Image (spheres, rainbow, N blue to C red):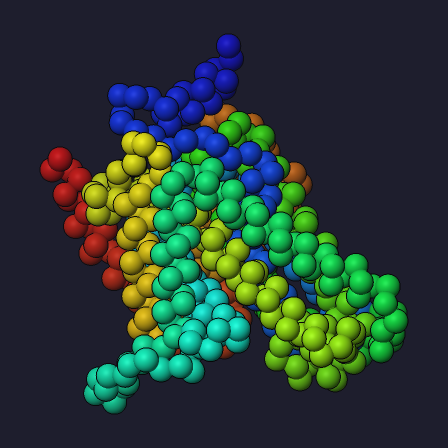
Length: 471
């Protein structure tokens, strides 16, 4: 047995050593990884953001080019993270990448920001969106249905039917994930297949039906397209956000050296194809001036192609899409906090793994409670804008970690090596830095407040560090 193989086996043994107590179960394969990647990304963006992109780029060829180019940048990120995921096949993904490259403080700050707002706020936003669309079918769950209100100074807290629906969705999906990672992944896979099927039906029929618009992809380009293209890319890259989620569940992947890269890369490649096809259908359904002014593009395009009843079906597809996206995020994001607690850098109770179902039940519960509080508070959207800058900062830092690890840990086994190194990771880092610069420019106050939230993590890190040393 080679030294490299021995080290890989040793790393995997750490996940199954009975002397360390119950461990996570390696039950996910490449198929699960691809569907988790698709499910974590494919939420509402494909139905809503095309209007923003059309306003910035009123040219059909450039619109499709932006979606494909954004997908290739995301694929560069997937190729980069895949090497580190195969190197450190542990639950928590980026927590470990940052910790191994820069030290425990970097990993902690990622987990700190993720729990407080980045991941929990994202879950809350999805849950609230689920309530909003469910209210279109069941009026009780509408966000306009106010059940109670309470004035607090100049602000009024309101309990809405949409908030109740969001909390119920979080509770249901968390309960399913308590049963085991395979059960959580099974539900996630079924929902993802359903939403892929609905989009495939829209694309399949929309590509061949007689359409009201014939988009000229080769039309002459307008002058000065570089700046508008950069603006459009911001929306495109956010539409691909969540592609890294499978890396968070690396501790539950069978044969991680093969399946983590396959899941990340296959899922990202599928997303590029889905986004390109659906946006081409939109371009066949709506003239660009109409597309750019339409908030709910998916429903408007379906109505233009198939008639008024089709918009209702698209609303149902969006509801399923949000539910699947919420499922993927609840499954994967909860895996960040258990290894932090195991390292003595978070609440010790979150380190426990359920011995029967072998899932981080305490982390799942804590995540569900906090995300539900954010949903019911109605303030998650404001909080989430504060950490957008910090989130993109972590993207860039994680991409750069690959270079640090190549230099600092050359002997660590790498079952998969990033294709196109060093240029592909550099492309991903540059796109993250551009997104970060734009966020700082557009939201300077929120960006500084987000950094302030991370600064608050410094005394928390010092406190947990001292406690861990006493044990």
